[in-house]
Amino acid sequence: MAEHITTVPKRKSYDVVIIGGAMIGSSIAWFLSNNANFKGSILVVEKDPTYEFTSTSHTNSCIRQQFSREINIRVSQFGAEFIKNFRHFMNDDPRVPDVVLQSYGYMYLAGDDAFADTLKSAQELQQRCGAGTKFMSPSEIKQAYPFYNVDDIVGANHNLVDEGYFDGNTLFDWWKRSAREKGAEYLTNEVVAIATDDKGAKVISVTLKSGEVISCGQVINASGPRAARTAKMAGIEIPVEPRKRYTYIFSAAKPLDRDLPLTIDPSGVHMRTDGANYLAGCPPEIDPAAEFDDFEADHSLWEEKVWPVLAYRIPQFEAIKLINMWVGHYAYNVFDQNAILGPHTRLTNFVFANGFSGHGFQQSPAVGRAISEWITYGEYRALDMSPFSYGRIEKNEPFLEKAVI
Image (cartoon, rainbow, N blue to C red; front, side, top):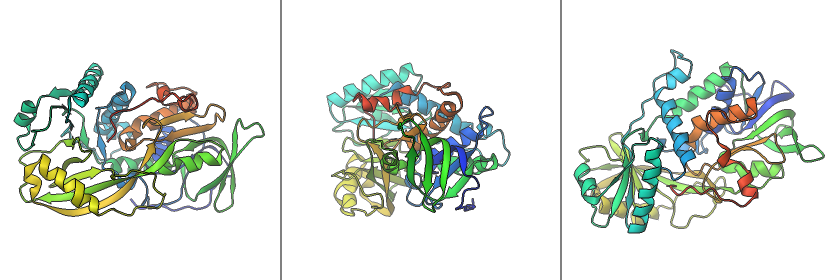
Protein backbone atom coordinates (compact mmCIF):
# COMPACT_ATOMS: atom_id res chain seq x y z
CA MET A 1 0.00 0.00 0.00
CA ALA A 2 1.51 3.33 -1.03
CA GLU A 3 2.00 5.85 1.73
CA HIS A 4 0.53 9.33 1.43
CA ILE A 5 3.24 11.47 3.04
CA THR A 6 2.22 14.61 4.91
CA THR A 7 4.78 16.64 6.86
CA VAL A 8 2.70 19.59 8.09
CA PRO A 9 -0.14 19.13 10.61
CA LYS A 10 -3.59 20.34 9.58
CA ARG A 11 -4.42 21.65 13.05
CA LYS A 12 -2.75 23.36 15.96
CA SER A 13 -4.45 21.15 18.54
CA TYR A 14 -5.35 17.44 18.77
CA ASP A 15 -7.16 15.43 21.39
CA VAL A 16 -4.65 12.59 21.05
CA VAL A 17 -1.07 12.72 19.77
CA ILE A 18 0.53 9.30 19.20
CA ILE A 19 4.33 9.42 19.04
CA GLY A 20 5.29 6.51 16.79
CA GLY A 21 3.22 5.13 13.94
CA ALA A 22 4.46 1.56 13.63
CA MET A 23 2.54 -1.54 14.77
CA ILE A 24 1.62 -0.37 18.28
CA GLY A 25 0.90 3.24 17.36
CA SER A 26 -1.24 2.21 14.40
CA SER A 27 -3.15 -0.34 16.47
CA ILE A 28 -4.01 2.38 18.97
CA ALA A 29 -4.94 4.80 16.18
CA TRP A 30 -7.26 2.25 14.61
CA PHE A 31 -8.95 1.11 17.82
CA LEU A 32 -9.49 4.73 18.85
CA SER A 33 -10.84 5.81 15.46
CA ASN A 34 -13.07 2.71 15.34
CA ASN A 35 -14.54 3.35 18.82
CA ALA A 36 -17.97 4.94 18.38
CA ASN A 37 -17.63 6.59 21.80
CA PHE A 38 -14.43 8.39 20.94
CA LYS A 39 -15.20 11.69 19.21
CA GLY A 40 -11.76 13.33 19.31
CA SER A 41 -9.01 14.13 16.83
CA ILE A 42 -5.94 11.89 16.39
CA LEU A 43 -2.46 12.79 15.18
CA VAL A 44 0.12 10.04 14.60
CA VAL A 45 3.69 11.32 14.31
CA GLU A 46 6.15 8.93 12.65
CA LYS A 47 9.66 10.02 11.67
CA ASP A 48 10.19 7.36 8.98
CA PRO A 49 7.28 6.55 6.63
CA THR A 50 9.23 3.57 5.23
CA TYR A 51 9.41 2.01 8.73
CA GLU A 52 12.76 0.58 7.61
CA PHE A 53 14.38 0.59 11.03
CA THR A 54 11.36 -0.10 13.21
CA SER A 55 10.88 -3.28 15.22
CA THR A 56 7.76 -3.77 13.09
CA SER A 57 9.86 -4.19 9.94
CA HIS A 58 12.17 -6.74 11.57
CA THR A 59 9.60 -8.89 13.33
CA ASN A 60 9.26 -12.65 12.97
CA SER A 61 5.48 -12.18 13.35
CA CYS A 62 4.61 -15.03 15.68
CA ILE A 63 2.11 -15.49 18.49
CA ARG A 64 1.99 -17.81 21.48
CA GLN A 65 0.13 -18.39 24.71
CA GLN A 66 3.11 -19.92 26.47
CA PHE A 67 3.79 -17.18 29.01
CA SER A 68 4.37 -17.27 32.74
CA ARG A 69 1.86 -14.50 33.57
CA GLU A 70 -1.90 -14.92 33.17
CA ILE A 71 -2.38 -11.44 31.73
CA ASN A 72 0.10 -12.19 28.93
CA ILE A 73 -1.76 -15.39 28.13
CA ARG A 74 -5.08 -13.50 27.97
CA VAL A 75 -3.51 -10.80 25.81
CA SER A 76 -2.34 -13.42 23.29
CA GLN A 77 -5.67 -15.22 23.35
CA PHE A 78 -7.36 -12.02 22.21
CA GLY A 79 -4.58 -11.58 19.67
CA ALA A 80 -5.32 -15.01 18.19
CA GLU A 81 -9.04 -14.28 18.13
CA PHE A 82 -8.39 -10.98 16.36
CA ILE A 83 -6.07 -12.53 13.78
CA LYS A 84 -8.42 -15.40 12.93
CA ASN A 85 -11.40 -13.06 12.63
CA PHE A 86 -9.54 -10.08 11.20
CA ARG A 87 -12.04 -9.16 8.49
CA HIS A 88 -14.92 -9.32 10.96
CA PHE A 89 -13.07 -7.06 13.42
CA MET A 90 -12.46 -4.69 10.51
CA ASN A 91 -16.23 -4.28 10.23
CA ASP A 92 -16.53 -6.95 7.50
CA ASP A 93 -14.93 -4.61 4.98
CA PRO A 94 -14.85 -6.69 1.75
CA ARG A 95 -11.48 -5.13 0.84
CA VAL A 96 -9.84 -6.63 3.91
CA PRO A 97 -8.23 -10.05 3.39
CA ASP A 98 -8.52 -12.98 5.73
CA VAL A 99 -5.40 -13.59 7.80
CA VAL A 100 -4.29 -17.16 8.46
CA LEU A 101 -2.75 -18.19 11.77
CA GLN A 102 -0.42 -21.06 10.93
CA SER A 103 -0.55 -23.03 14.17
CA TYR A 104 2.58 -25.14 14.07
CA GLY A 105 3.03 -24.32 17.74
CA TYR A 106 5.88 -23.47 20.05
CA MET A 107 8.17 -26.11 21.56
CA TYR A 108 10.03 -25.04 24.72
CA LEU A 109 12.80 -27.58 25.35
CA ALA A 110 14.14 -28.13 28.88
CA GLY A 111 17.73 -29.24 29.25
CA ASP A 112 17.62 -29.69 33.04
CA ASP A 113 15.16 -30.59 35.77
CA ALA A 114 14.93 -27.03 37.11
CA PHE A 115 13.68 -25.63 33.81
CA ALA A 116 11.41 -28.63 33.33
CA ASP A 117 9.77 -27.76 36.65
CA THR A 118 9.37 -24.16 35.45
CA LEU A 119 7.70 -25.43 32.28
CA LYS A 120 5.36 -27.71 34.23
CA SER A 121 4.28 -24.83 36.44
CA ALA A 122 3.70 -22.63 33.38
CA GLN A 123 1.74 -25.41 31.67
CA GLU A 124 -0.62 -25.68 34.63
CA LEU A 125 -1.29 -21.93 34.51
CA GLN A 126 -1.74 -21.95 30.73
CA GLN A 127 -4.13 -24.90 30.94
CA ARG A 128 -6.23 -23.09 33.60
CA CYS A 129 -6.48 -20.20 31.14
CA GLY A 130 -7.77 -22.53 28.43
CA ALA A 131 -4.54 -22.88 26.45
CA GLY A 132 -3.72 -26.21 24.82
CA THR A 133 -0.20 -26.49 26.25
CA LYS A 134 1.01 -30.00 27.08
CA PHE A 135 4.16 -31.09 28.88
CA MET A 136 5.94 -33.78 26.86
CA SER A 137 8.54 -36.35 27.85
CA PRO A 138 11.56 -36.92 25.58
CA SER A 139 9.95 -40.07 24.16
CA GLU A 140 6.71 -38.16 23.42
CA ILE A 141 8.71 -35.43 21.70
CA LYS A 142 10.53 -37.99 19.59
CA GLN A 143 7.31 -39.76 18.65
CA ALA A 144 5.67 -36.56 17.44
CA TYR A 145 8.81 -35.07 15.85
CA PRO A 146 11.34 -37.83 15.04
CA PHE A 147 13.87 -35.35 13.64
CA TYR A 148 14.83 -33.88 17.05
CA ASN A 149 17.90 -35.04 18.96
CA VAL A 150 16.55 -35.27 22.52
CA ASP A 151 19.55 -36.98 24.14
CA ASP A 152 20.09 -34.03 26.50
CA ILE A 153 16.42 -32.99 26.85
CA VAL A 154 14.36 -33.83 29.95
CA GLY A 155 11.01 -32.51 28.70
CA ALA A 156 9.20 -29.78 26.79
CA ASN A 157 6.05 -27.67 26.63
CA HIS A 158 4.18 -27.72 23.35
CA ASN A 159 0.94 -26.18 22.13
CA LEU A 160 -0.54 -26.58 18.66
CA VAL A 161 -3.60 -24.39 19.26
CA ASP A 162 -3.37 -20.72 18.23
CA GLU A 163 0.43 -20.63 18.32
CA GLY A 164 2.58 -19.96 15.30
CA TYR A 165 3.02 -17.52 12.43
CA PHE A 166 0.65 -14.88 11.07
CA ASP A 167 1.05 -12.10 8.51
CA GLY A 168 1.26 -9.20 10.94
CA ASN A 169 2.06 -6.73 8.18
CA THR A 170 -1.45 -7.17 6.81
CA LEU A 171 -2.86 -6.07 10.17
CA PHE A 172 -0.43 -3.16 10.25
CA ASP A 173 -1.24 -1.97 6.73
CA TRP A 174 -4.98 -2.13 7.22
CA TRP A 175 -4.87 -0.47 10.64
CA LYS A 176 -3.02 2.47 9.07
CA ARG A 177 -5.32 2.66 6.06
CA SER A 178 -8.53 2.32 8.02
CA ALA A 179 -7.45 4.75 10.76
CA ARG A 180 -6.73 7.35 8.09
CA GLU A 181 -10.09 6.74 6.45
CA LYS A 182 -11.74 7.28 9.82
CA GLY A 183 -9.98 10.61 10.30
CA ALA A 184 -6.68 9.86 12.02
CA GLU A 185 -3.93 12.05 10.61
CA TYR A 186 -0.50 10.52 9.93
CA LEU A 187 2.40 12.94 9.87
CA THR A 188 5.95 12.31 8.65
CA ASN A 189 7.76 14.37 11.26
CA GLU A 190 9.40 13.98 14.65
CA VAL A 191 8.49 15.11 18.16
CA VAL A 192 11.56 16.87 19.56
CA ALA A 193 10.13 18.41 22.76
CA ILE A 194 7.26 17.88 25.17
CA ALA A 195 6.05 20.77 27.35
CA THR A 196 4.24 20.33 30.66
CA ASP A 197 2.36 22.76 32.87
CA ASP A 198 4.00 24.57 35.79
CA LYS A 199 3.00 21.82 38.24
CA GLY A 200 4.31 18.99 36.07
CA ALA A 201 0.86 17.44 36.16
CA LYS A 202 -0.13 17.65 32.51
CA VAL A 203 1.39 17.66 29.05
CA ILE A 204 0.26 20.82 27.28
CA SER A 205 2.04 20.57 23.93
CA VAL A 206 4.55 18.79 21.73
CA THR A 207 7.02 20.49 19.42
CA LEU A 208 7.74 19.04 15.99
CA LYS A 209 11.12 18.99 14.29
CA SER A 210 9.68 21.30 11.65
CA GLY A 211 8.94 23.87 14.35
CA GLU A 212 5.19 23.60 14.90
CA VAL A 213 3.94 23.52 18.49
CA ILE A 214 0.89 21.26 18.85
CA SER A 215 -1.48 21.47 21.80
CA CYS A 216 -2.74 18.08 22.92
CA GLY A 217 -5.19 16.44 25.27
CA GLN A 218 -3.37 13.10 25.57
CA VAL A 219 0.11 12.02 24.44
CA ILE A 220 0.80 8.35 23.79
CA ASN A 221 4.37 7.10 23.76
CA ALA A 222 4.41 4.37 21.10
CA SER A 223 7.99 4.93 19.98
CA GLY A 224 9.31 1.38 20.27
CA PRO A 225 13.03 1.11 21.08
CA ARG A 226 13.17 4.92 21.34
CA ALA A 227 10.58 4.96 24.13
CA ALA A 228 13.00 6.11 26.82
CA ARG A 229 14.09 9.07 24.68
CA THR A 230 10.46 10.11 24.19
CA ALA A 231 9.68 9.75 27.90
CA LYS A 232 12.74 11.80 28.82
CA MET A 233 11.34 14.77 26.90
CA ALA A 234 8.55 14.77 29.49
CA GLY A 235 10.99 14.37 32.39
CA ILE A 236 10.24 10.68 32.85
CA GLU A 237 12.69 7.77 33.09
CA ILE A 238 11.65 4.33 31.85
CA PRO A 239 13.83 1.18 31.71
CA VAL A 240 13.42 0.50 27.98
CA GLU A 241 16.36 0.20 25.61
CA PRO A 242 17.14 -1.20 22.14
CA ARG A 243 18.59 -4.70 22.17
CA LYS A 244 19.88 -6.42 19.04
CA ARG A 245 18.19 -9.61 17.87
CA TYR A 246 19.37 -11.71 14.93
CA THR A 247 17.21 -13.53 12.39
CA TYR A 248 18.43 -16.04 9.81
CA ILE A 249 16.59 -17.65 6.89
CA PHE A 250 18.06 -20.91 5.63
CA SER A 251 17.25 -23.84 3.38
CA ALA A 252 17.96 -27.49 4.17
CA ALA A 253 19.39 -30.08 1.79
CA LYS A 254 17.12 -32.61 3.54
CA PRO A 255 13.89 -30.76 4.42
CA LEU A 256 11.85 -32.07 7.33
CA ASP A 257 8.79 -34.16 6.57
CA ARG A 258 6.50 -31.98 8.73
CA ASP A 259 6.30 -28.47 10.12
CA LEU A 260 8.99 -27.46 12.60
CA PRO A 261 7.38 -25.84 15.65
CA LEU A 262 8.98 -22.64 16.86
CA THR A 263 11.53 -24.47 18.96
CA ILE A 264 13.32 -22.73 21.81
CA ASP A 265 16.56 -24.62 22.41
CA PRO A 266 18.21 -24.57 25.86
CA SER A 267 21.07 -22.65 24.20
CA GLY A 268 18.76 -19.71 23.51
CA VAL A 269 18.64 -20.33 19.75
CA HIS A 270 15.15 -20.66 18.31
CA MET A 271 14.10 -22.15 14.96
CA ARG A 272 10.90 -22.72 13.00
CA THR A 273 9.34 -23.47 9.64
CA ASP A 274 9.26 -20.46 7.29
CA GLY A 275 7.37 -21.45 4.17
CA ALA A 276 9.59 -23.76 2.14
CA ASN A 277 12.58 -22.69 4.22
CA TYR A 278 13.41 -22.27 7.90
CA LEU A 279 14.01 -19.38 10.26
CA ALA A 280 16.36 -19.22 13.22
CA GLY A 281 17.22 -16.48 15.66
CA CYS A 282 18.98 -15.61 18.87
CA PRO A 283 20.32 -12.77 20.98
CA PRO A 284 24.04 -11.96 20.75
CA GLU A 285 26.41 -13.59 23.22
CA ILE A 286 26.91 -10.24 24.94
CA ASP A 287 23.62 -8.35 25.03
CA PRO A 288 24.09 -4.67 25.87
CA ALA A 289 21.88 -1.76 24.89
CA ALA A 290 22.39 -0.86 21.23
CA GLU A 291 22.48 2.57 19.65
CA PHE A 292 19.19 3.44 17.96
CA ASP A 293 20.79 3.32 14.51
CA ASP A 294 23.10 0.34 15.11
CA PHE A 295 21.99 -2.60 12.98
CA GLU A 296 25.48 -3.91 12.27
CA ALA A 297 25.64 -7.71 12.27
CA ASP A 298 28.09 -9.96 14.10
CA HIS A 299 28.62 -12.50 11.31
CA SER A 300 30.51 -14.90 13.56
CA LEU A 301 27.28 -15.61 15.48
CA TRP A 302 25.89 -17.78 12.69
CA GLU A 303 29.03 -19.87 12.25
CA GLU A 304 29.99 -20.19 15.90
CA LYS A 305 26.64 -20.53 17.64
CA VAL A 306 23.50 -20.79 15.53
CA TRP A 307 24.51 -23.32 12.89
CA PRO A 308 26.15 -25.73 15.40
CA VAL A 309 23.02 -25.65 17.58
CA LEU A 310 20.76 -26.28 14.59
CA ALA A 311 22.88 -29.23 13.43
CA TYR A 312 23.00 -30.71 16.93
CA ARG A 313 19.30 -30.36 17.71
CA ILE A 314 18.13 -31.49 14.26
CA PRO A 315 20.78 -33.65 12.55
CA GLN A 316 19.08 -33.11 9.17
CA PHE A 317 20.21 -29.49 9.51
CA GLU A 318 23.87 -30.41 9.19
CA ALA A 319 23.59 -29.52 5.48
CA ILE A 320 21.93 -26.11 5.29
CA LYS A 321 22.43 -22.92 3.29
CA LEU A 322 22.05 -19.42 4.71
CA ILE A 323 19.76 -17.43 2.40
CA ASN A 324 19.21 -14.18 4.26
CA MET A 325 19.74 -12.54 7.65
CA TRP A 326 18.91 -9.29 9.40
CA VAL A 327 19.34 -7.50 12.70
CA GLY A 328 16.38 -5.92 14.47
CA HIS A 329 15.84 -4.25 17.82
CA TYR A 330 13.72 -5.37 20.73
CA ALA A 331 12.22 -2.55 22.79
CA TYR A 332 13.59 -4.32 25.83
CA ASN A 333 12.24 -3.60 29.31
CA VAL A 334 15.28 -4.31 31.46
CA PHE A 335 13.17 -4.05 34.63
CA ASP A 336 10.93 -7.11 34.15
CA GLN A 337 10.58 -7.79 30.39
CA ASN A 338 6.89 -6.84 30.47
CA ALA A 339 5.01 -4.04 28.76
CA ILE A 340 4.56 -0.63 30.36
CA LEU A 341 1.00 0.51 29.66
CA GLY A 342 -1.33 3.28 30.68
CA PRO A 343 -0.89 6.72 32.21
CA HIS A 344 2.00 8.07 34.20
CA THR A 345 1.28 8.43 37.92
CA ARG A 346 1.66 12.23 37.97
CA LEU A 347 1.66 13.30 34.34
CA THR A 348 -1.66 11.59 33.80
CA ASN A 349 -2.20 12.56 30.16
CA PHE A 350 1.16 10.99 29.21
CA VAL A 351 0.31 7.40 28.30
CA PHE A 352 2.78 4.53 27.86
CA ALA A 353 2.64 1.76 25.27
CA ASN A 354 6.21 0.58 25.62
CA GLY A 355 8.72 -2.11 26.55
CA PHE A 356 7.23 -5.15 24.82
CA SER A 357 10.55 -7.01 24.82
CA GLY A 358 9.86 -8.83 21.55
CA HIS A 359 6.13 -9.41 22.07
CA GLY A 360 4.77 -6.26 20.44
CA PHE A 361 3.32 -7.79 17.27
CA GLN A 362 1.34 -10.48 19.06
CA GLN A 363 0.23 -8.13 21.82
CA SER A 364 -0.71 -5.23 19.53
CA PRO A 365 -4.44 -6.04 19.17
CA ALA A 366 -5.00 -6.17 22.94
CA VAL A 367 -2.78 -3.13 23.52
CA GLY A 368 -4.59 -1.04 20.91
CA ARG A 369 -7.94 -1.99 22.39
CA ALA A 370 -6.77 -1.30 25.95
CA ILE A 371 -5.26 2.13 25.30
CA SER A 372 -8.33 3.07 23.27
CA GLU A 373 -10.49 2.16 26.27
CA TRP A 374 -8.31 4.13 28.65
CA ILE A 375 -8.39 7.24 26.48
CA THR A 376 -12.15 6.98 25.86
CA TYR A 377 -13.47 5.82 29.24
CA GLY A 378 -10.64 6.40 31.71
CA GLU A 379 -10.55 2.66 32.48
CA TYR A 380 -9.83 -0.75 30.97
CA ARG A 381 -13.00 -2.65 30.11
CA ALA A 382 -12.37 -5.79 28.05
CA LEU A 383 -9.22 -6.90 29.90
CA ASP A 384 -7.66 -5.42 33.02
CA MET A 385 -4.19 -4.30 31.94
CA SER A 386 -3.31 -2.64 35.24
CA PRO A 387 -0.54 -5.19 36.04
CA PHE A 388 1.45 -3.38 33.31
CA SER A 389 1.06 0.06 34.89
CA TYR A 390 3.98 2.44 35.30
CA GLY A 391 3.40 2.52 39.07
CA ARG A 392 5.21 -0.79 39.52
CA ILE A 393 8.41 0.81 38.28
CA GLU A 394 8.12 3.71 40.73
CA LYS A 395 7.53 1.23 43.55
CA ASN A 396 10.35 -1.05 42.36
CA GLU A 397 7.96 -4.00 42.19
CA PRO A 398 8.91 -6.04 39.09
CA PHE A 399 6.16 -7.97 37.34
CA LEU A 400 8.53 -10.50 35.80
CA GLU A 401 7.78 -12.41 32.62
CA LYS A 402 9.95 -15.53 32.53
CA ALA A 403 9.08 -16.71 29.02
CA VAL A 404 11.10 -14.26 26.94
CA ILE A 405 12.81 -15.49 23.79
